Every structure is written in C-alpha cells, then in structure tokens.
Length: 58
Image (tube, rainbow, N blue to C red; front, side):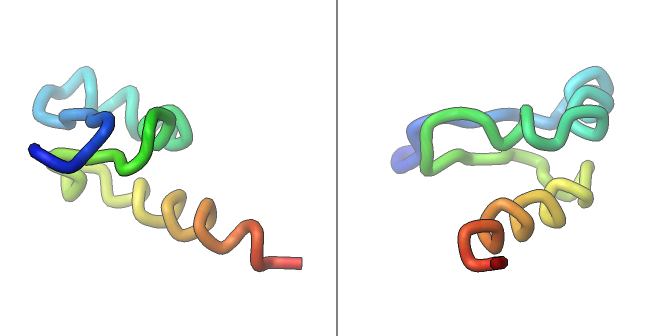
C-alpha cells in the first residue's frame, strides 16, 4: 500500500453490504484508490467501467 492516495477495505460483512448498497461511495476518495478485497463485491467493477467510460460516452 505504497502508491494509493486513499483506500477502502471490504474485509467485513458491514463494509461489503455498504459497498453493494452504494457503489459510487466505494469509489469516492482521492485517486489512485485501492479497493482491497474487491472480489467480495464484484458489482464494483461495473461501476468502475461506467465511471471510466462516462466522459467518452456521448
């Protein structure tokens, strides 16, 4: 964890539940952002793709 400016850990049930309820909240923070244990809330990556594609999708 040397290069991230912010991070979120999805290593507890409460954090995973919150991540699933508010995907944009998981991505909020200084970038680059580390999402530890991301595989426990796979829908996060759909939100990441949407956020990355948004400026190009017109």
